Image 1: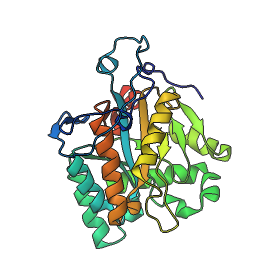
Image 2: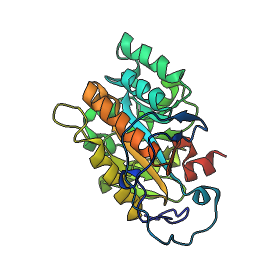
Image 3: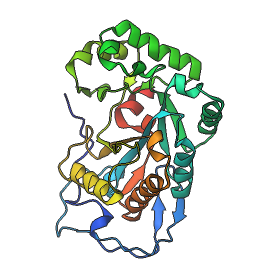
Length: 286
């Protein structure tokens, strides 16, 4: 797998969980909007004495890293809570939606319209059937995989051929090729040949057995810091974050996700963008 480098890290630590920031700050997003923070909780930031020398691009002059919030399997339980969080924190995100879920019930159809009409969200393809959750059989038949994504594209009237494979962390972009389970590689290759830009993820917030978010926002902040510090992103300085709509159905999980985003914002070291703005995706689309 060839990694895309868009510039190396400027700081040895990125998160405001490690340095004191005032109780009032501006919150910046990739949506080019500002909101005033009102939390009284202080955040700690560890700043080294000397920054690394880097190419002076627009993003690394500002010292910011890009986070792409992505949410799979919607419309589903928790979709409305997701939208409330995005508006509360004023950040944009990408929803990888499933065709059958979009038309599974009146509530899901209504939620699809909420997603479709919300300018903080863009929609992307997560297949029509979600492989009926039988992933091994699904990827044995590449023609069936392509047909399934084509059905979702047509039924959901998706504009761009941006896709995420169900049950697999697969990347097929111009300079990024990665397959978590090799038996799925042929199907992934043919999906790319059919014109789809397949995007995986760098960090996933996984669920408990009760299908709510596992752990807390502090633990996830440390994982973000570790990924950037160790340069583990597929594209340097760009992190794709994944969780699922259905993990946000309860108040605790919704609050944890909101706190996670808030703490990232308060560091003033990150901007949030939609996946269509991811470097290699953006290059192909333009």
